[in-house]
Amino acid sequence: MGWKLIVAVAAGLASTASVIAIAEEKPTAPAAVSAKDLTREQFQALPPDAVIEINGESITKSAFQARNIKAVEEAAKRLPELRARAQSDARRKALLDKRAAELAEANKKAEAEIARLLAADAAKHGPNWAARKKQAAELLEQAAKASPTERSESDT
Image 1 (cartoon, rainbow, N blue to C red):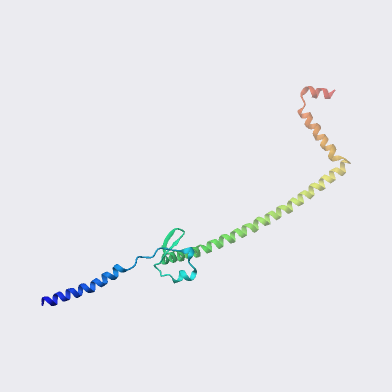
Image 2: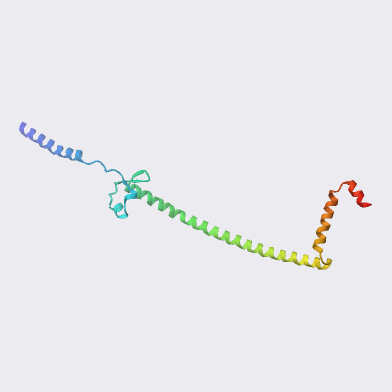
């Protein structure tokens, strides 16, 4: 019976040794693959646990894909808000453009009225009305700046 026990233990150790040898022979994980060197087909052929280097960050293919899926889902959630903001901005711009056009039209009308009034004033007061009006304004300004002595001299 001793021999049988020794043979059984030896057989058990021999089978365990092959498992241990296989575990020890398992190659280490390959170095990270640079993402900029991969084509779409090469990326798709990689196993999910393959390590990829993207912008100096090492990440597994599955983690990279999960992160991208999450980003797409978050962008899809924000899409209605972005559309509403774009529509609001478009309505605001249309309103501002409309107001600017109305203001430009009102300015044209005001300028036309001013020109009409100036022409009527000039027709009423005769030729060279603008030059005489300017001269009168200059004289009034000089009189306002004049000293009391100068004022008394001009009275005489």
